Image (cartoon, rainbow, N blue to C red):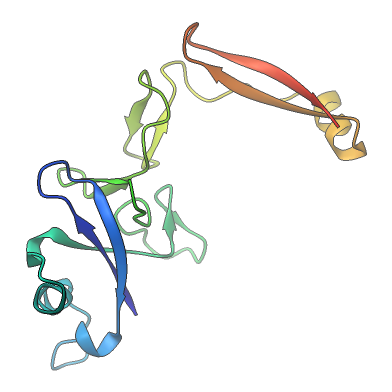
Length: 150
């Protein structure tokens, strides 16, 4: 089964994601071809073939759990955007200051990943007394440590 994202021609936003039965994406040699699925979707959904982009249910953050080659960065979702230049489906941008990291097909803060929790903070989570997380502060461009008491 193959999945395809329906793309808005102007904004490149994903409008919906449909799956197509294998019989409608395979060529005469049994090889899956995106173009065959696109033609099928155009015919049955009245949307241009070039605006149906195949996506992989198994790909997230440019990796796959099964170790196979990731496909187009992320599984497309409604509200994601299609980046034709990088061949990546991007999730919605979480903050205005964040930038694309093509290697992970994800957004990152302008100062990088959040800091690591200390062992004490991690242990408090495991024993159920506190839940420590870092939350992005867009106004100050910093990671703020937040304690949610259980």
